[in-house]
Image (cartoon, rainbow, N blue to C red; front, side, top):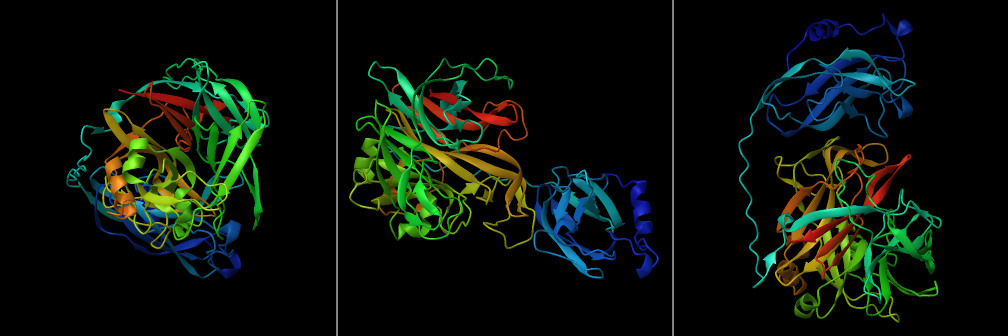
Length: 545
């Protein structure tokens, strides 16, 4: 990046704060104090930057009056991965005090000499920044080309007669829309599970549950599948509602502010027992675990017969949030060989607020059929990253200094660790005569991420499929290894069909079911289609070749 005349003027002005003295000091003014950045970095390297500015104005930098540090040359460029550095919630600087802005940043992908220069700004009434005070002294950082990253070795599959599933085995064949409203529930903000149900006449339907603004369980007919191409959702069919049962809700002994639970995670339909197993989570729960699993029988007359709910038992209860997200089925042969016949499973892992009891990566645990007379589940862990982290790519950096939540600096663009904005809300076990694998459907935060002002945000998001070898999971169930030592057999970045939007990838897949006879994978993907001011879900369907 060339250094323009702007910087000559900026440097000349650096020793002259605006205002002649205390009596004429403006409200907003600043003086540059110091910069700490490396002089040499590699392309895409994440590094720590510290910029100290002095408040020489008359207003305290605090609360709504916190300034933001913005990049220059040109203004608001993203050469270093982001164009801003926050003071962050709870920090302040009175007139006359210095404040150090701290953030990890990322070097550009282009080698060469790049300017590093910043200036403070405050938000105008229209939300746009007004720059004020001195710019920082300019630093020139030399960015050298990164050496090639050695290819990682893939775990060797161990199941005789079967091949591990990979992304290359899946072919996208089409999508359809879900109804915009059913009863008092809507498709705009509902993160439904998905369950396949076979009717007596041989046709198949899907069970869907809307959670906002009200709970409603319903059943849809699977329409003609049409490819969702070029962001054009108009040709897609909308699934027709065939049955509505209304809200699923089970009262529980009051636990803090919780007196009932409803399905807000994934679910699975047991055809033989005509029972829907569903899961519940509470994202801000800090006390003792609440029940996570329940079962409901949706009757033909529109009524619902409930049983449960059930808790994750201790000591697994110490990381009970690892198994929030949903319930799925294990193949019978797998259950007989590895889990003592337990054919249900809870998962799926990732971040929830108050993350100590979470899994830092995909998670799965086999459970026996729940006993209505017992409050706890019979659990065998298969996968859970507790005290360890699942691998991911290195396309992220934290917009604050060391000491954050799940806070590891990526080693290179290909090598990172599961972060505080990485989620897994759906997973599916596929066992075919020729292929098998456990598929965790993952959404990863990318680029700048931070816990800045009461929430976790990433500059962008990406969707990934993590494939796990069933034999590795089975050996974990038998106690041969720790659940956090199981590595994915392969990981692949995917792009789901969606209408164009900056937020299309923000939503994770929240429901998955598999038709083993047709070899079809159904995925419930929120946020795929714009409808007015909302974005509604679509169901995407893939065939295993």
